[in-house]
Length: 126
Image 1 (tube, helix red, strand yellow):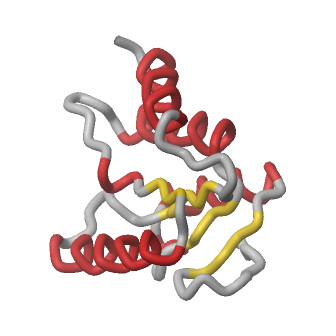
Image 2 (cartoon, rainbow, N blue to C red):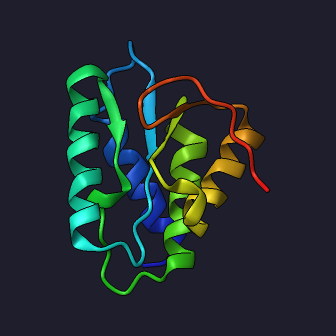
Image 3 (cartoon, rainbow, N blue to C red):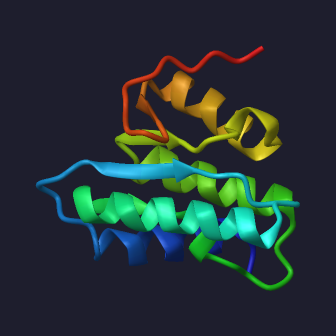
């Protein structure tokens, strides 16, 4: 199955779980090369978001055997373009190539961006 087919399945599946009365928050979180203790910290923070926000997409929760970083970026790009209303930028996002890519996409799409404390932020990319 190619990345476009996987993206369509992921979007279809996520769409059934979204409460249309609330915005969809996509969390841009560093994944590749992040130590386990840091991943657990991110996961705990995102779990906290779910207490306050209804629709939260956490890319940490999706692992597809054999997918490359480029395939993940393409899949999440399609998910963000289709479903996301707001992007939450995790602490340390500036050091992650994937997060920088997602930040550029959020800016291009005109998505509202929040920092990891859920405060409105302007994404500055160098």
